[in-house]
Image 1 (cartoon, one colour):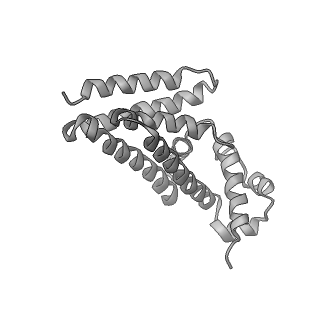
Image 2 (cartoon, rainbow, N blue to C red):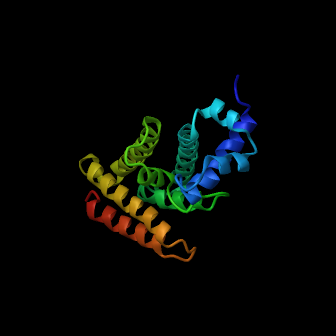
Image 3 (cartoon, rainbow, N blue to C red):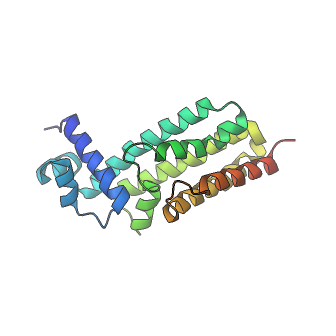
Length: 193
């Protein structure tokens, strides 16, 4: 028996709202079920476990993140702006309804010393997407020879920004501006002459 799309949406919405804002370990599955308005049997039939629900929520979040980032890249006027569009996408993603305080993937990685395979795969997929997209966008700016190194350094800057958003959740925080400035300086240093 399959779960209705509306029920899946309720479960995923509740999981995202609670697990990615309060923390995975700090949120009992009963609270997710209560917010979603579904029975335990429905959850276990659809996802098998809390971890299965978490993996599905991460998968949905990844799709939404990629779409947000692609839109920011498409709106950018130059190769350099496309490379730095990750920061515009982070801002846009954070302002959507129900947004978490920081990165759900970093949060999941932080909460699990030895994550179950579906959760490890979700975190690895997000990291791989960041790495490969940054590399792809770096090539026209700095060339093939510098693209890998620049992508790795920008991945570090993006991860640092996400961590600082958790430390300083104020909307007026200079974190985004500072992270983008650091990234722009790194791009300039590596730019093809």
